[in-house]
Length: 540
Image (cartoon, rainbow, N blue to C red; front, side, top):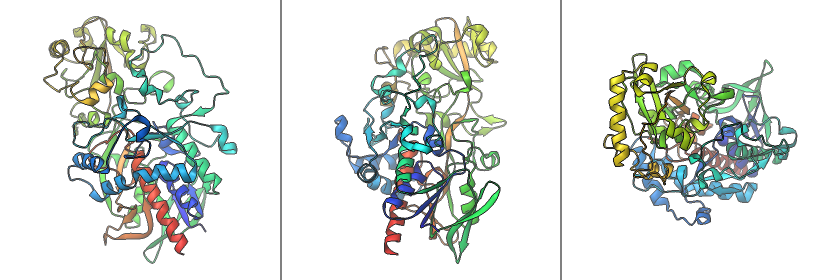
């Protein structure tokens, strides 16, 4: 019997396990998949944690009051305000604790590009300094566990991947040929993979019992208290008992029934790991948990899959939508959003379900040859005609392109002509593209008069479909300000049960605060839960 059982091995679960173990608790982590790390391990790895001691590293300042004002402005009264207060109050402690007590080093994102808050027009927003990530680490540090961690090959590098932002790599066209492969001796990973590796290593160093291929199926209740969980491994059912249990099982992105019942708009593409099927949601509901925040997701529009079965880019076409010489149209051939919006707000612009799909689906990213030559739109050179996938459309005229994608030619021609007028004047009077700090930070500073606007007038012209997508669903177990799951019947904490990450409502409601807005709250609530468990064990 352990003091603490954790379900899930992403940022929330491993942080909770590590903090509890450092505090003297015996900890068991159960991971449904064969590999450790969850979606965290294949993510950008940033954590939105305001007011950390690393602000001075980039010459910035912040205040808890400003950060809280920003989150409250974003939430607009939705969600639980106590979560916002708790996140702002304890975020700095997360970094300090993990660096000082676990030896996990962090670096801060600079005040440039995607590092700024995603809604910089709101009061309290910050133009950088609220996102941190861990330094890179070699897989060899895991010893026998190096083959049991989930990794993203794109995150393997001999260079600090944070340079992507500081050197504005999104502006550079990709090379025409294949990139030079990294030597096999380079096994250093950065960002999400590095975060998962460092948290796992710190847990293993403190004798946390990590079990993979072990699916939790039912919480064990005795006298109204959660005292453990039943789980399957190799076809056998086992009981793992503990006075404290954390559900950190991620979203329900791969459960088609739950998505149909709980979401109001589709998720056609996701980077969420395939094992995230809502297991924690359903187990906790069966144990009497109150639910909150269901129906939302971390929206991120996506294109179809690119070469070698890999997503076109990790940002879900973020750079392509923001850079000059691109725009988006719906099936009526009309623009329907500021294409440069952050991916959460861009995803919301698709609209709710209407008939077989949302209001603005199908949608198309349209760009011209100048966009290809200057920026390498779609993150790779336009393939030769005989190598193009069926979803990739090209034509010598806008009207022919419109016919190719079943859009009314006159409507699309008018849309392009109107957009080109905005590009020449530098003022998008329809949607304000290029006006916010976010748009300007991600645009091309050398493109005038607007860093985000460029004409669509150089043949050939191209179009690729844009689909509704998400990083993961969000919302689920309603938790209090320290991560205890609340009862649907009494509204009080269910003894012994905690929740964190995307299976809970413990993130800031109403939007996507900034880079790492998923991982930051997950780690903060994991930290608070681990500390609570350690304190309880110490008192026991």
